[in-house]
Image 1 (cartoon, rainbow, N blue to C red):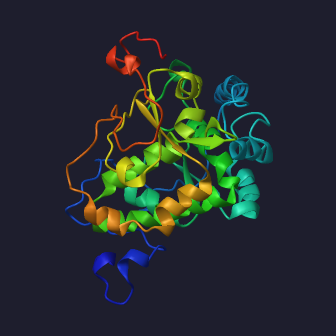
Image 2 (image 1 turned 45 degrees about the horizontal axis):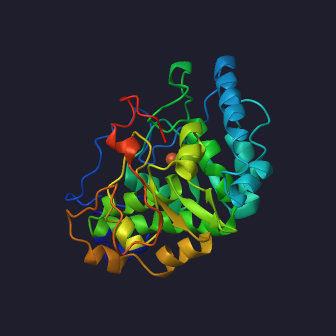
Image 3 (image 1 turned 90 degrees about the vertical axis):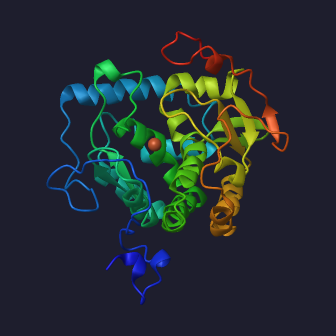
Length: 316
Ligand SMILES: [Fe+2]
């Protein structure tokens, strides 16, 4: 019997089990590598070769210099606490030990992108699934699949922040409800515009907390300083209805005032009313700035209009 049909445990609250996927819910057709169980976890972190450790060190060096003045305070503090620049790809068990003592999170190895419902299951249990592989030198500047650099450098530092750590767990739990209402796409948009590409106001200055931005140099500058993208205050109902770009710089960034605000707007408010009110197929364009938005910067969208990545457009 599917978990969601069990009469004894309310299905939406059984976070210790992988949520059953209703047949009506579309998921990306990811093929699980042989030998892995349903949680998609690999038995251990990979042993990286010297060239792979060098790639980490070079990515780290390139990125770390850009962090002051761009990354938010919690991220900078987390980087320091976890000492991710100690040389080579960090050891998951060492950073997990440190993380566990701070917020109860750990980092676990997965072979590739994993299905949404399995991802939610791990987040709901304070485990962050990190790609076990590192990009090659040919992919140094851009890789679409989340590798160990994106996952560990980009995501793990903020898991040291108690409020952000709670948001991530709440986000995982929200996955159960999203499945129930078939609103995975809406929840993914929220993740995209917060955890991956979120901006935060600190002393009236915009700073970055999104991992998708902080793990690459171009978007670190573009998101804060570019004239092309919109910067709009986060409204969860609006964001969940917004389309997004997967393999290019974002056309719009959403801004929060604090992690407390983010937590309040999502977990404390509850997701069910939003899912119930969302029309199944409606989305705002990713470039839209609406009359109802609180707009910090109305982007020119020139990067997007000139064709973005691959067209030679400058990320301005
Ligand atoms: Fe990510």
